[in-house]
Image (tube, rainbow, N blue to C red; front, top):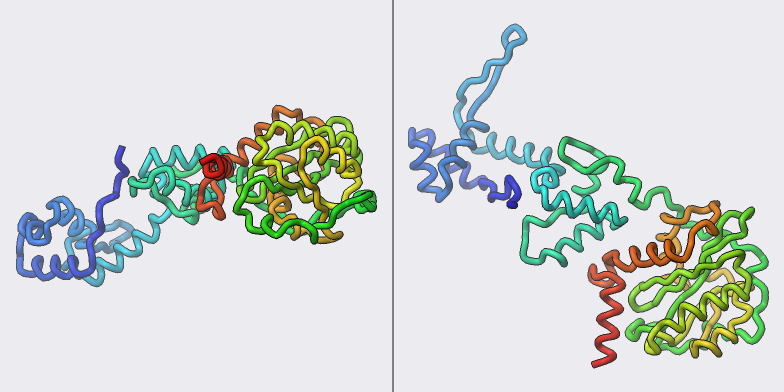
Length: 346
């Protein structure tokens, strides 16, 4: 259904013409004809902008006033400014889509740009991220439910979590990131991954493995029941990676953690080269670091991560892979990966 209030607003030049014609006692229908506007538009303009009021003994009296273009323009601009957060209330279809994507943990910026991708020929399905934020935090009738704010990424610190000394042990026969092929930096060909662990509470000793494809941001999560020992991590990586097409098995870049002590076994089983970052250099796995920050929305720090089974991890990964990304021109990682694979197959 079309959104209310989608008509083009009167310009200042049109308001000047209305003022001149009104001063000459020209009727509403004739003004509308000369401006090529609907009579209801002119009538509404005069009714809204051509009145004034005064208070006598606490009672308001409204009476006709001379129509002035400058006054009408100023009042119209003020009213438009007050109404910036009401488009969602005026357009039920837009409201429904925005609410659905917020529930799927899209950010307001992602929603704003994704609307242009999903509805390229429908100008009514447009809303800025600022309007979405206003609808969430300055709630009015017909706006978004306040409880949807829990789906926003708020309160995150940019500080990298401390690593334990155990994760910085020397890895036998490791290959440093300096020896990684230069074409990996270009992100033009899919199949180069970055990996790490997100750690649970100290008491539980739990963790989840993360693998992120560099070209597209496509995510896979590793279920690590019991602990994140080298044996468990190797088994989980081999199971995930061998399920991938060969085109996606080029390389993995990981931190110098003890959980990768069996990296040679992973390479033998998958055919993927494994490279290790320099100590204290998270920017060398920037895609993975950013993704781990996103995952903390689902797996908060200091919690027991062992309670989440492989099915839920796959569900979270699918949700992240279905979110539009700015660096992908607002395509989703899943769409971008499918596009790259199609190009390789052509």
